[in-house]
Length: 307
Image (cartoon, rainbow, N blue to C red):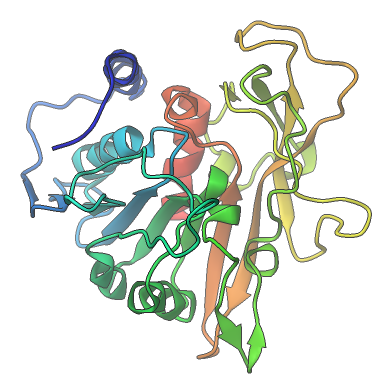
């Protein structure tokens, strides 16, 4: 059972329409075979360049409707690109996909639960969005092992504050922060939270980057995060692809808020874990369900799987 309000169902309808209409003319005369356990979903890939590769998508946050967008993104990747996809969710005590389970601000002993993280061991790529997950150690270990695997990681929106109390992952005996691994972390809302949408501005010198192939319009209702400051500047080992310009409201054609400069919202870097294997990292601080209704946001995310 998935707990979804009437408003969420309406959003789900809009997103389904947007995803279907935004597939750039690709025809779908067949359907991928999809199966599920009681607690996660699996979509078998059709023919395509991703055939034989496995993408795991993780939806584990309370604000941005990833429990709706990650299955739709998995269907795009399986039907139109051939990837086998497994979608994992955070669930409540009844085993229901439930985005209303809060972050442990009040009850610090509360633990979240993401069943099926064992699938990370056989993943070829992970698309991950979580927010303040307080997971048991045995579940966190699956993340740590993946961080050491040398395989690519696509971190969306709230992933940069994805775990309660920070990341307890160590390299060479020293704690590693999400800021260090991903190249930035949430430091506040630069754009107005739930008030100012984001228009993506491609960094001209990186226009030919593979993640930006075929990308034109980039827009979403999620606001621009501030992930860097004078003390923690944009890292030298990161390549900025897109800047986010806050708009004056949530409308797509709204003018920019000229009082706010654009800040990085999409960048790449690498991470070398404890086994000496190097992973490609793509961090995109957009990526809400409504953002993924935009063709540019969606194409960047799909392109990153190939990068």
